Image (cartoon, rainbow, N blue to C red):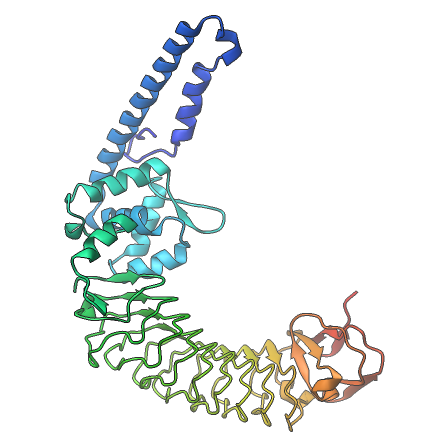
Length: 445
């Protein structure tokens, strides 16, 4: 991995050097069965040369690492210790909360071959570079408690061993990124999250986040509490004015949400599978919401006003079996997806006439829906805009509903309405999947 004239690492991998040395010393074992001493000598020479190559790469790496600015050094070490194998977009999102110019820093490290991005868009690096990066962190202190980054279970156990109380674990108040799947204790306590940017405690046993009701959450950007089955309440989040994503999906015993009215930066809200949740609090100031997912909220009976959410693109209400009404959505002019399949008690949906961007409308098995979806609902769609429509089965009130996505096989009486001047009736559809293009109907082969 030599340097070019500008002092930047050229992308010559260790594998290439290893392969070259291997070829130089490649002699079949059978050839030397009668000459073992010579074979052992050549093997020893090969290993010595490999050690020389590793030392050479190590020296080049140290020289290149020392030439990085402080932000690039931190990004490299964070990736080596924590983010190798994660998607580039996720790494950028996290590190942008920690360092100014993080996206530019990642690009620079990619250009210098200190990082690599694979075909799936995941950040990677060579094993040897990861080893060197972790070595730098290890040399910060022999005591893991004094290091800035922890990734090994052994080190984390050693740190927590001296901070553990009966019901909680203490963390540094300087912590910015905390991810602990299957967190074993009931809560976080003795912890001031004033610097915390990302909090991920999925699949954990906690019953509450922290005991203190008012916390400094100014820097918090993302909360992920997915599948925390014992969690019943979430503490006050009024200080989290910069929160962008909030995931509580799979929290089956969550009965109440805190006030969300002040979360003006919130973009994603996922409450899917919160089976005990009955109401969602006001979102009147959450004007940047792009996605709301309440799929599987079986006891949800009421939604807040959503009419002001001009940025809303996806609204998921599938299997909200207790929901009877969807509020006015006329202001959600950018809505692309409205999924209400399995809403057995839903009796009415709002007018769809203004949704010029709507691509997915799923009303499968809305057995009690009273209003029909007519051609007039799509009269303002642009020419040749595509919608993938399917007919609901007879058991779900048959001909009144148009459903988006996938392919189902039914034999039912159906009405297919795709503009206000044409109605097609057919009794023998097996596959009710087709494309509706304004002005014509196109059946798949």
